[in-house]
Length: 50
Figure: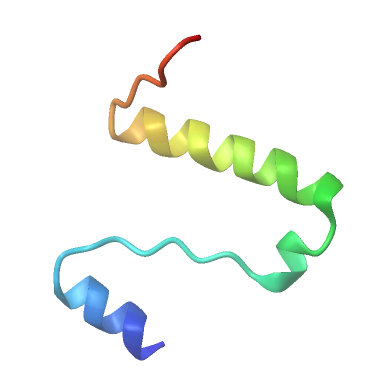
């Protein structure tokens, strides 16, 4: 928790995930896919295309 506070006080945003969210790969994959889609959208990031 101290690390989170230190980062936030330094101006960073912290996104935490719980162990329960990541235990099951079938649940974790869509969670991460949606999270990164939302994160990229929020910060106007365009992922590279192959």
